[in-house]
Image (tube, rainbow, N blue to C red; front, top):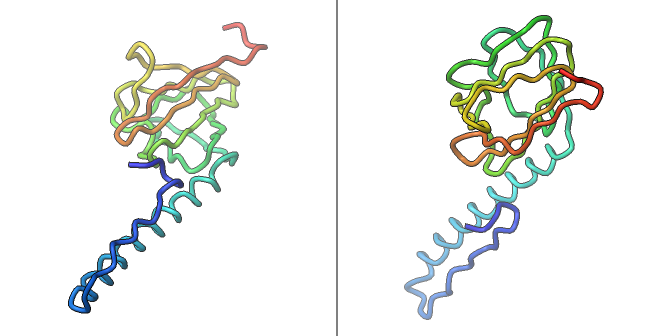
Length: 151
């Protein structure tokens, strides 16, 4: 399947006789519906690119991936939900999480996430981690620590 946003409209072959016109119109309508639905989803993804949102975390949190970058805020050390750290995204969606506070934020491995070395990851202040949604899990792309942090 082509990458979303590059989907081409598949126009069914027109009938050679009037008898096939009804089925051709039905097939064309179905293809138009698929095409416009994919274009709408593509527009939503493009609107998210570059967007930043702030999320206030509590114990056993689950993150909604509703922006490209999520700045994480907390008033104490927190750990994600053991089953779902991050809710499902759109295919190939990229998400960056950055801890903005001086408390630890633990992202659980195996909770709708696949992390490097298959272990939980602790975000310290200003550190970040990036993921890509593969249709079933958030796959870790990279992680970084703020240059001013030595821990």
